[in-house]
Length: 397
Ligand SMILES: Cc1cc2nc3c(=O)[nH]c(=O)nc-3n(C[C@H](O)[C@H](O)[C@H](O)COP(=O)(O)OP(=O)(O)OC[C@H]3O[C@@H](n4cnc5c(N)ncnc54)[C@H](O)[C@@H]3O)c2cc1C
Image 1: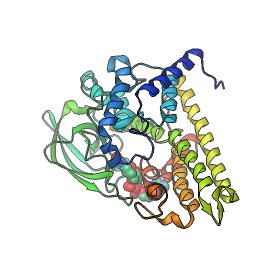
Image 2: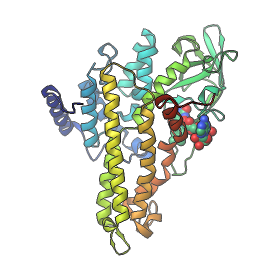
Image 3: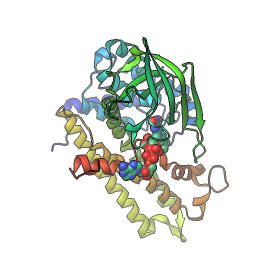
Image 4: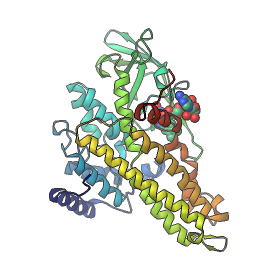
C-alpha cells in the first residue's frame, strides 16, 4: 500500500490550510463537544462557515458538479476532512444528515426533479433533514416496520409512528420508511418517501435524554398525505435505499478525527489531574488505557484507508464500516469513563457544581454514550453484520 500523497494532493492540502486560516473562526465554530443547544446558539456563525465552504465548492465535495457538488476526488475529500478535523472545523455542519446520507441517496436513487429540488438546499444548509426509520417495535429488526403508506390517487396516505428521530424538532424534511405492500415479503414491501415536516397530520413530540439534552423525538402520522413524486426509488425499493444510507451513516459515525481530539484532551488532563496524590499520568493503569485508545484509533485509521482503497477502485463500501462503528462506540464509552476516573472524587461532579472539571464536559460525555453506541445500530447488530457478511459465518434465518 502506498500512503504518500501526490504533489497535486499536497498543494490541495495547503490550499485547505490557507482557507481555514482565513475563514474559520476557531473559537466561534468548533466541531468538538458541540451539543445541540450550543449549536443552535452558534447558528449564525455555523451558517456563515457553511456559506464560505459552499462558495468554495467544498460542501458536497465529491458530489457531481451537475448537482451542485465539486466533483472532487475521494483523496482530496479525505484531505479536506482531515484538515478541517485538525482545525476542529465542522465539515458536515448543520446539514449533517442531508450531506451524510440523504443527499447521496437522492443522487443515487432520485429522479432528476428530486435532485434539482432537494440537493441545492442541502448544500446551502437551507433545509435540514431527519431520518424516520425506527419504530417502537422495529429498531434492530428495521425491516419489520409497520408505519403504513397507502396509495390514494397521486398521493400516499401515511399512518403510524416513528421514534428516536434525531433533530425532528428542527428538520424541514424527513426521509421516511413506510410499508407500502403488507402482502410482500418484509424487505420488499417497504418504500422510501421524502416528507415535509410541516405536513398536516404530522406531530412531533420531543424526548429528553439522560444527559439533559433533547436530541430526538417521537413522530406521529395521522392520514398524512405526500405526493407520489416524493417517493425515493421505485415502490418496494425502500430497503435498497436504506442499505445505501446506513452504510453512509456508519462510515460517517466512525470518523476518527474527533477521537484523536478526545485522546489529546485526555492526555493533557492526565498531566493535570491528581489521582492518589500523584499526577494521573504516573498511574500505570491510566497509561495503559491511554495507550490502548491510541492503538485502537490507529487501527481505525488504517481500516478507514481500506474503505478509501475500495472507493478508489470504484467498489461500494458496505459491511466493513461496521468494524469502525463498533470500535468507535467502545472508544466513546471508554473516553467518558477514563476522564471521570482520572478526576478521582471530582469525577462525579456535573455541570455547574463547584469543583467540576472543565464545566462537567466529561461527565456529560459519559452520559451520552447511547448517542454513538445505539444510534446507527447497536453493537450486537454490528457484530452480526461482521460475522455474517465479512467473516461468512452462518446466520439465523
Ligand atoms: C442517540 C440516538 C439517535 C437515534 N437517531 C435515530 C434517527 O434519527 N432515526 C431513526 O430512525 N432511529 C434513530 N435511533 C434509533 C436507533 O437506530 C435504534 O435505537 C437502534 O436501531 C436499536 O433499536 P431499538 O432501540 O428498537 O432496540 P432493539 O432493536 O429492541 O434492541 C434491544 C437490544 O436487543 C439486541 N438485539 C436486537 N436484535 C438482535 C439480534 N438480531 N442479535 C443480537 N442482539 C440483538 C440489541 O443489540 C439491543 O441490545 C437513534 C437512537 C439513539 C440512541
